[in-house]
Image (cartoon, rainbow, N blue to C red; front, side, top):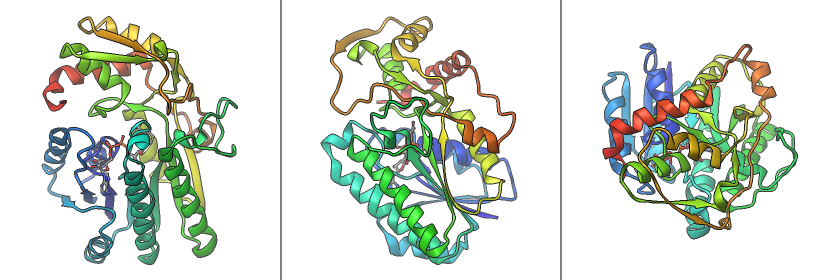
Amino acid sequence: MKILITGIAGFIAFNFAKELSKNKNLKIVGIDNYSDYYSIKLKKKRIQILNRNQNFKFFKIDLLEKEKIIKIFKTYKFDEVYNFAAQAGVRYSMENPSVYIDTNVSGFSNLITVAKNFKIKKFFYASSSSVYGDSKKFPLLEKESIYPKNIYGLSKKFNEEIAQNFFEIYKFKSIGLRFFTVFGEWGRPDMFMFKLLNASFKKKKFYLNNNGNHFRDFTYIKDVISLIIKLRKLKNNNHELYNICSNKPVGLKKVVNFIGKFTPKTKMVRRKKQLADIYKTHGNNKKILKKIKNFKFTELEVSIKNTIDWFKNNKHLFD
Ligand SMILES: NC(=O)c1ccc[n+]([C@@H]2O[C@H](COP(=O)([O-])OP(=O)(O)OC[C@H]3O[C@@H](n4cnc5c(N)ncnc54)[C@H](O)[C@@H]3O)[C@@H](O)[C@H]2O)c1
């Protein structure tokens, strides 16, 4: 079985590939453009770990390089494709919108077109809770009308619409995963939890927006990976969307206080709500839990504690 994973040097793709690598029958090819949005050192370390598996191969390819993508599809004849490559981050989409259109819209369109032409049977792609914008109908259901509030969310909505269109026109099946604030081992330096840990352990300033009065449906990476791996084994005859969330929003103030019990005192700078910020995310996870029976999410305290322990041993990878 041959699998292509894009954005392989990134947080979620790396954790997914690491778990899949345990299955020695799988040949995994990963591509990434090593974007410098955050620490390249961290991205290269992830690839170094995956390279220990003889069944893994890495190529530095950008989603915009369509000819190179066609070439690896021809060479490897993939059975499954997982697209995690993207320009992530909500705030940065206010500063540099064009990179979101390039990678997330044009890049995605390249990949899904090639996957459709090569008749790929399983195509998964990362969407985001950001597609819901400021919707207040909590917990958010997949069938809700969506009105993203920023270019990042809009780019993900566009992915979902392309995938739907490909299903209606070509009967190309795919699964869109709407991730909600994923955190944990090997996580992203630009996101709240690692920003806080990095500031705390390295005596830097930490900016707490809106006094911590935001709520996030934190979802632990190990739970996310385990859900995708279970979903991968099931049959899918449509274009389906799933919220990947724990369905338990928690206030950032509470998380800051909990983390503070295990870390050095942080230089906290309080500032007002930032323009692109969403007040609350809270997804309904009934749809995925109906597919994957008896799934148990890890306790938030346990997963945060694991994340802190991991960070203590790997803080040199963070700028
Ligand atoms: N982490 C979360 O909480 C979260 C939440 C919602 C959605 N998502 C989505 O899940 C996916 C994975 O997120 P992540 O947290 O692992 O982010 P990440 O930034 O760690 O990983 C994305 C990877 O894609 C690569 N990349 C960027 N542009 C590329 C291009 N043009 N061609 C090839 N590779 C490119 C980057 O170098 C990076 O390694 C993304 O699509 C993201 O938008 C993540």
